[in-house]
Image 1 (cartoon, chains in turn purple, red):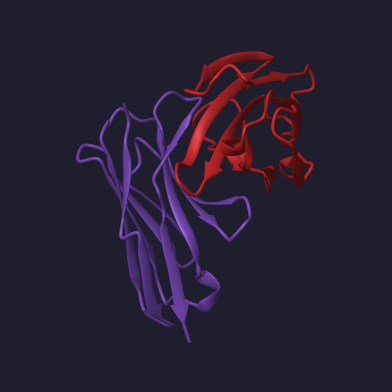
Image 2 (cartoon, each protein chain N blue to C red):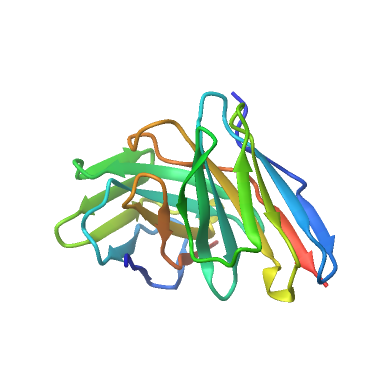
Amino acid sequence: KQEVTQIPAALSVPEGENLVLNCSFTDSAIYNLQWFRQDPGKGLTSLLLIQSSQREQTSGRLNASLDKSSGRSTLYIAASQPGDSATYLCAVDGTASKLTFGTGTRLQVTL
Amino acid sequence: KAGVTQTPRYLIKTRGQQVTLSCSPISGHRSVSWYQQTPGQGLQFLFEYFSETQRNKGNFPGRFSGRQFSNSRSEMNVSTLELGDSALYLCASSFEGVAYGYTFGSGTRLTVV
């Protein structure tokens, strides 16, 4: 059974700092990994999708890497802003029809 | 282009009642999946439909059911509601194939009293 772990569970950083969120998964047989952002009480916003054959994806200040063999992914956020405050979730797709989610990292960026 | 639309946004129901939630996927997406999010259990997979067929099902009791129509719109039904069914129910749609990822709706907040 696939298990996804995210570390840390919560993180508070001052504005402007670069930060790394970690995601690990137990079964390396995945089709892809997706990072999402969730604001309180809202739905999920897709940030980056990394297919199993890829090593990384970039979008603006965000960069996600994937090491499938070791079961790890990182989300790098450059020059953090207060608007980045949210919960970040990683999810792996191992069956092409179902996502298994981590428990999330709650990020607060302070002024 | 329109995103994934879930209705209603909020629902309050009484224990023992049943409820139906609706999800309209992005145009052209044929896969629709449902997730339950609670503070204690996080996001858990309920089921996935593709071209009106259930392809995958999570570990939920039979009170939770769903269906998909020919236009790809999906409904989820929960019968005999329990207090523990209070949650944010999220729907996601995906284009055929694993290269495209999933797009989520804003969710339906269900409160059972």
